[in-house]
Structure formats: structure tokens, C-alpha cells
Image 1 (spheres, one colour):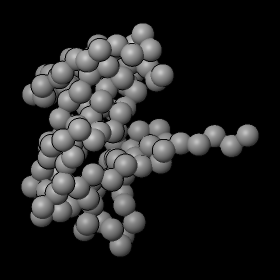
Image 2 (cartoon, one colour):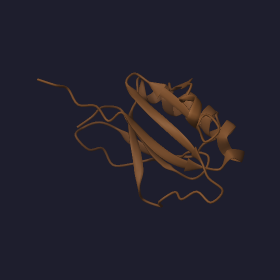
Image 3 (tube, helix red, strand yellow):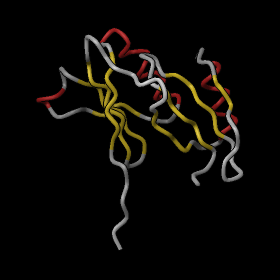
Image 4 (cartoon, helix red, strand yellow):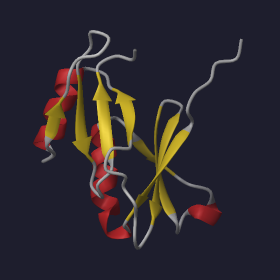
Amino acid sequence: MVSHVLQHAALETRRADGEAATAFWRVLGFEAVEPPPTLREQAAWLQRGPTQIHLLWSDEPVAPPQGHVAVVVDDYEATLERVRDAGHDVEERARHWGAPRAFVRAPGGHRVELMAAPP
């Protein structure tokens, strides 16, 4: 049986927000990886396990108000503390499947769901 993984999500981001956006994803355990040479001027890539976040440089990025990516985090409470310490507002939400979850806005406006466990 083949295991399927969402390999990456691409989020339009202003280049000016790139450093702050990269720092945000690092708080969630993602590390910078080099895009292919043909894409290095157009994006920054970050990776945690098999999953990548691609920050696509855009002069007029679109961040859907309710659309979001969800990340299952290690040590949920410690992660929320690090996110808050980094200056981000955390909006805790109703528990689904018996596990806590919260929303936060990444620099550039993208909504990110933090989950203690998957469904």
C-alpha cells in the first residue's frame, strides 16, 4: 500500500514579509531548504518531515480569509507558547476529535491551524 502525503502548500507572500514568514514557519519546526536554481529568485521553501511550505513572492499576494493550512505540531502547548512569544495572536478553537486546535495568522496574512493531533 502506498502512503500519500500532501507534499507542499504554496502561499503567496510579499518578498518584504519573507524574513518574518520564514521565522514564523521555523517556530513550527520547518527548516529552510533550497528551491531548484530556476525558482530561487521567485520563492523560499521550508520543510518539516516530508511536507514543504513554498512562500511564493508576489507584489499583490492573496491570503483567503478563511482558507488555511493545518499543521499537526509536536508538544502543542509548548508550540503555542513559542508562537505567542514570537508575537503572534493565537485563537484557540473548539476541540474536534478530542484534541485541541488553534488558529494563527502567519506574516503576510495566511491563516494556519495548529493541531495537537490529526482526526
